[in-house]
Amino acid sequence: MEALMALIIGLLTGCGVYLVLRARTFPVVLGLTFLSYAVNLFLFAMGRLTIGQPPVIAAQAAGYADPVPQALVLTAIVIGFAMTAFVIVLALKARAELGNDHVDGKQEP
Image 1 (cartoon, helix red, strand yellow):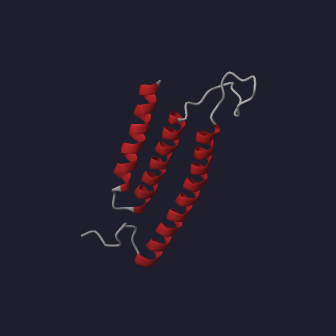
Image 2 (cartoon, one colour):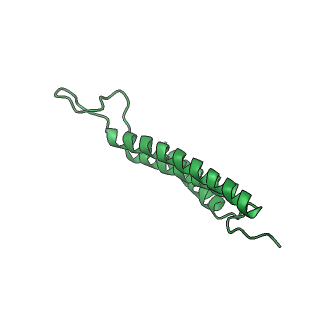
Image 3 (cartoon, one colour):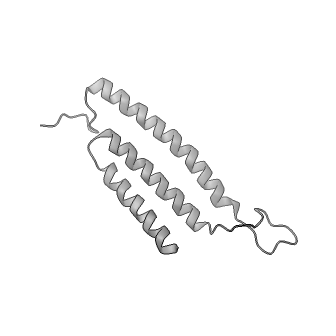
């Protein structure tokens, strides 16, 4: 299971970096989204999630689930959604202003 999770995180990261380096705005937005998914999965994997345990330490509890990774991922999801919405609006504005959707604003030869 650990190898599968590492493979998925690596695949999302690789695809995200490849798409961020493209010259068009939509692949850049998609690449940033893939990178945020990879970071969220990485935080979940590092949190060692447990099933059926209380989220806080009780007096009689033998184990507990750490709530910090879950809170970090929830915050990252909200920030990632806001970032994606902002970048899409920024790309649409650049398309309207420049007439093309290249990241640097230049036309292809």
